[in-house]
Amino acid sequence: MSKDIAIYYGTQTGNSQTLAEQAQAAAQKAGFNASLFNLADVAAADIASNAPNAIFIVSTWGDGEPPTDAENFFSELSGASLDLSGRKHAVFGLGDSNYEQFCKFAKDLDARLSELGSAQVLPVFSADVNFDGDYAKWQPQALAAFGE
Image (cartoon, rainbow, N blue to C red; front, side, top):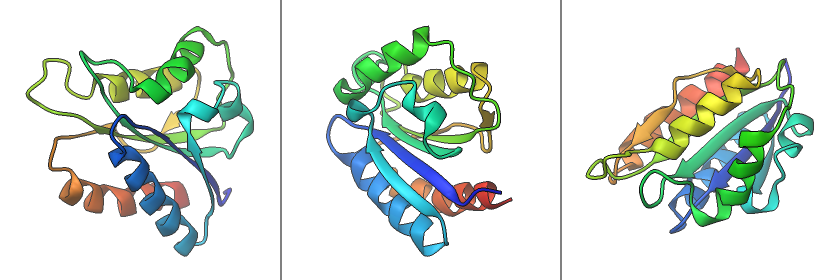
């Protein structure tokens, strides 16, 4: 079991970044070697060579699209032929349930990672506008799932 974990975020307003920073601190406290990445700075191929465990904390923007800083990454990932077998992921999505495509980007990202062979350790979580309580419950579950 690898104790290396990459925490990726895609944000429009900063909420996903804040949660990703909290996840990194919690992972380090739990004994993981945790690295933090903004999806704006990551190529799709990077996830095949970074840590084998990955947490994605992403928001949905507009009508179900990725936030601006994750657009290029997801476009690359959508067309990539990567082998992510042997890798694990968990996705926490932030959105607004008043929109028809609630947390669509998080769901699409999770589905694409699975298609490429990454094992989902938890079902994708779709958090609404008041996400703090949900995140506080989800984060320790995610870290525990990677520790198994």
